[in-house]
Image (cartoon, rainbow, N blue to C red; front, side):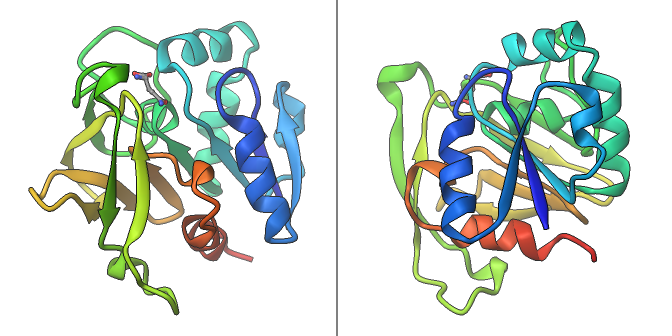
Length: 191
Ligand code: GLN
């Protein structure tokens, strides 16, 4: 199994460390042809407007969209925004998941916070609360069609959603050292 990590901007190196911990082959993706032999793709956190513009400049927007129609793709934070159909402003989006997001829903960088999330929906052997970091994070305000809410905060706001092989998380599992979300993503890949 080989997983690509979009490496245009943001926290891609941290995802590579997590996948290596799980013994998975990884590849940094900066060119469309680098998608060819991948089983899945991670779009990291960072800044979604910048990353979206770079995806347009590098001719990656349409190839990643096509890849996502048949493969597993996981977006964390800015990556989750890029997977969405609607972010309430004009910016390049992949429009792969039928979700709408509100960017920076919890405020500015100084309002970053940590939360213990109930991840029983992931059906992992260990379902102890997941310690999550929210850094200028989006909220997933609506899930439609085939997309389902996967994880919510205690106030029921949605912070993880899934549609088949597509996964969006508002937070940063790559910063925790806890590999359960990465394992969950790998479990979505159809062989
Ligand atoms: N605030 C960023 C955005 O709107 C996302 C932040 C992150 O990825 N940590 O794109």
